[in-house]
Image (cartoon, rainbow, N blue to C red; front, side):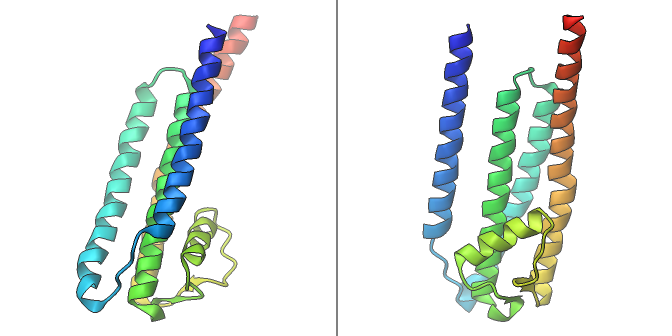
Length: 174
């Protein structure tokens, strides 16, 4: 039984690594066509991607509330959703910066977009890259609200389950 858990954990770590590599490769190689004719349809795709991300987070929170006590599965799904959030917003920021260069200051490359997304998510905000235009500010505001509502709700559910498991184990040891 212990070997099965070890193999399962190893497979989860492998999947997490593969998802991270696939996400990074996809983020860096997906083509961006920011000409004016493509701005509205691609902008709509970005809005729909953010809405879909919200739906996925809400669905995952519900699943976590009713999930089994396998903390590895919960941590794996948390990683997937956070990685998806980072790549979705990074792509949206990069697309907007390419389509409307005056919307951001300092956001010139995909790496800048990834960096800006992570600094926004962890609320560091060095100020070297920042939203300047109204569309960029709306997108960043949506990102901040998304992070506060969905990510913190997911972490709250996850930490409550971990806390219950620890308390349960302590009760069994007595």
